[in-house]
Length: 389
Image: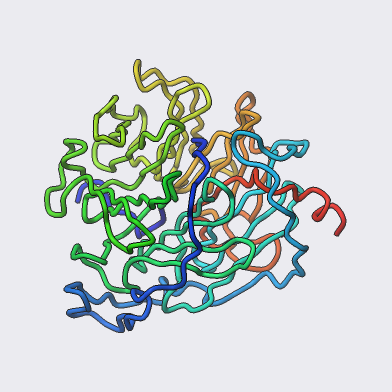
């Protein structure tokens, strides 16, 4: 999910189950491949990508704050840690894309955890970020760096990668604008490989693709055999995958044995970005447009049950790329091009919490630079550490 890394349409929150048997991996041979420096043929049959100043963003930056000790794991999605009072019930980890970092912000706006890029050649432009089912790892995709990563949360260490930085392609080991990567309960990683028009299931241990939906060069809506620029691959409670396709605003629920439960076009949405299930079985999806909007609808009747859309002013959204229903019913989303993450009250449709200064990018405390993804931390009780500062 991002600004110009998205494809023009013309061309959990699911609760994942607990992962079992995941072994911490070391950075593999894929990262040892020299990154591209300019256009032309690349390794493994791919094409080198020219890195622009925009893709480099702010470089390697940090907020500079002193971080508190990390609390022990104490919860999961089935039994979360105690919630905070107020509109945001839990801390959120944010993929601060053009700052090339992950940053976790508590409801009181304290920065409690941060992961700056360890090396811009292999880690740059983090797009989405999602916790593993047990909270031990964070999975990150980098669309315009053409790779995905796994971060050990407690060690703040890059422990696994797939894809070759700055090399795009469809050959084995290569990606072309990977989006929305998740670690599944069975230890596999699922990602939407947008420009290859496919969903990939990757075995991190073997460093190989073990299952694929869709085919490169056959970009049309006929799930799961063919997909048209998929940019979302959200795991659901029972293991089904919710797939979002950009052209036509198609959202499909597909079982792991590739049966389509339903496939519908999201109403009132021009550019769907990473659809998610709500607690009552509906779908929430951000419209990656200006002005942007958020829509919640019933996938069976296609009836819109909630919608947020403001045409101008402070409340207007500019290319929001991910919206998630919080446990208290509010909606949290990243408003990419306004450089902020906001919480919207479902009843009043007012912005009731914000991190980032509207229309002003930065990396010091209180600022973001093109925040493009987020996830909710229900795994660790940060209240004591944050409030003691």
